[in-house]
Length: 135
Ligand SMILES: [Fe+2]
Ligand SMILES: [Fe+2]
Image (tube, rainbow, N blue to C red; front, top):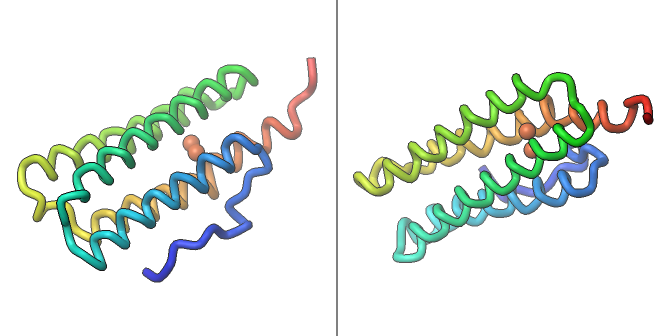
């Protein structure tokens, strides 16, 4: 994986979400690069913790937005977020257990998961927001 550059196709058109997605991807990029360039140095744990916090911040605000606009598929979308939350928790636990468990491949997998989620599921939310009947 080269530089993780934002692809305009991932934009949903909802500004708050797009801003957070860009930030989130930048965060993943930083973690992947840190691992590639220096391996797990003494800052690596805090990079991971920051990433995990940012994932949570983003999911919560996206869920709040879905509630606010009455997105009909909220339950399923939240369940998908919960799956990612569990993976991120597992990542931190793995790191605590043995930092060797946190591999480039694992981080790359999570990054790709996120990109897929953005381009499929989050796009649906944005489409709903754009086309919903205004009360
Ligand atoms: Fe989402
Ligand atoms: Fe999202």
